[in-house]
Image (tube, rainbow, N blue to C red; front, side, top):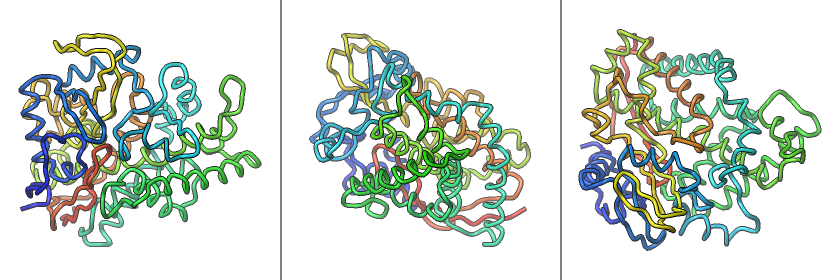
Length: 415
């Protein structure tokens, strides 16, 4: 029995969305989420750490909430993190953390504008050759290991990490440091990847980027760090704390989510050899398959919103002050939208309906880059690999905010 389907002793449906260990058994998690979807679009929970909230599990309801940021802003508590959310976390810090994830309205738009040019389609197209070269390196690594490796740690983690760090101008020698810091911050609940104090990792990352910003202000280069370091908002230099928030999001969310999508997608392919055959026979399916991989894996497990006025969504009445958890993994397997939703289908006609990168004003800044990286990887596998099979148990991170397959031993028959 694989690690993904072994029963978890402390699996608790009353903490389906907030207990990190629940996400190490995704087959069971999805069965519980399907039961909720059959019962309705929103469900009330009372959590001992995070308090009262409504979990939105339907695709249409999630879209409707996401399209109304003025009614459902994310606020500073944009996710259930730490011991009790952002507000509790903030009490332990000497400064106010500001990131794109916790901003709204005009402030969010201004900070997003600082970096948006780097993630527009034209910029992503310029990165295509570099990404293809990195995928080719990964395929060479696969060949040198005779098709056997831990796909998650050996390919899915380093590939998107290298892309975003090269954009930022971070030297390759510092990649292990950045990987450790982001894992300690975003996989804090995982006994292997996390640490006892994720705030130490945050402080270490801030120190690193303050030094890099200082260097880029003295000697600007053609990288994203220089653009941020010398950027302005309302004709004023960017606030240093908010600037550090930008780096924290870019350096971590810029690779963690993509790597989990890649490793989870390859796990699904290993379980469905017919889909590997379809990709190999028709490599043009890679782009659509990338959307399907994000749908089936949904590495971002949730974000939250706070209701500002009494509003009906999908037949459910939300009241002022209601905290809403948007469940992306559940919405991405909504049976009313996706036929046979638990099955990876690289040719799925409506794969682009997936909401794994969010929707509306807070649609993921790096979604196009992530999709391009996943597409390039799938195309590379289609060229180089005849078949993929599991060579041991897949292991999942314990995490209820961002998580996925952290170890994936595979054996590939090379073309």
